[in-house]
Length: 152
Image (tube, rainbow, N blue to C red; front, top):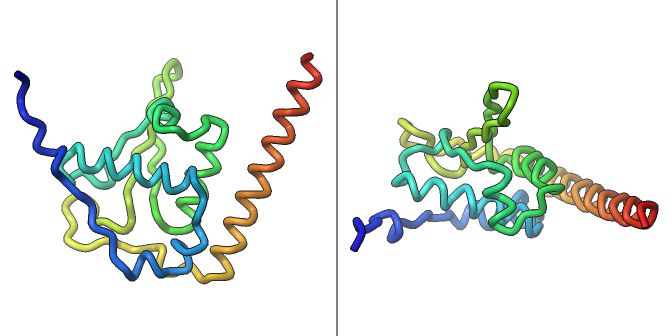
């Protein structure tokens, strides 16, 4: 039998303040919630100590159920709504390295309090951001269908 994985019993607490915030209330977007969940899992796998150094590849997001075509836009929505910070890492030109992520609603590595950028988002701004995301999503789906029809 292998070594027990203590991180399996870890958890992430969410504050009611965040749940009732305009940013969270407007962000009922499946890929966004999935992205945050996947980043929380990565955070927990590291004992909850490496927030800001969470590395998740596009393939890992895809394996978690997020469409590869929507990852970049979902990532940008999460940044714009104040839920994550992304640090882009340099690659060797052959393999694209995963980005480093920080969940703003949890303390960063070495810090005792979260930065909570989501608190600065108004209901109007959140609504605009989510509407733009959904419009981009529909446009991307339409373009994909057109490409498929043209290829046939």
